[in-house]
Amino acid sequence: MMPTTFEEFEKYLNQDAPPKEWSEALQSLWFDAKGDWEASHDIAQDLHSTMGSWIHAYLHRKEGDKWNAGYWYRRANKPFPEYSLDEELRVLVKANL
Image 1 (cartoon, rainbow, N blue to C red):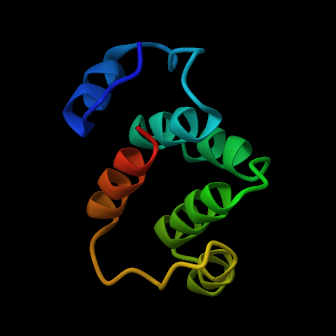
Image 2: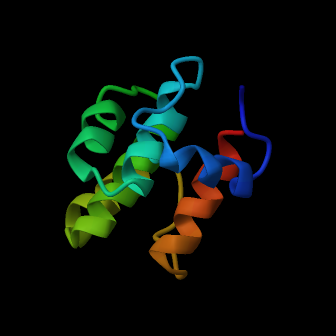
């Protein structure tokens, strides 16, 4: 079942894996929220879309690689965020619901 709010998304974080019926973008964000940057990045780098670029940017921002993050934000047509990583995760999840 697809969550319809960020709070519902968070309820799935106690599972061992994201639901298979979720989009790859949402699955990538699930792995990030669980603290598995590598698994999240593995999915995001294979998403050849604006959303994939945005998630990729967020992950490199989280990693501390501002230059690489900037490249991916430009690819996603998004400005470099002025808000926290936690808020960006929330915005990304909501954009994928």
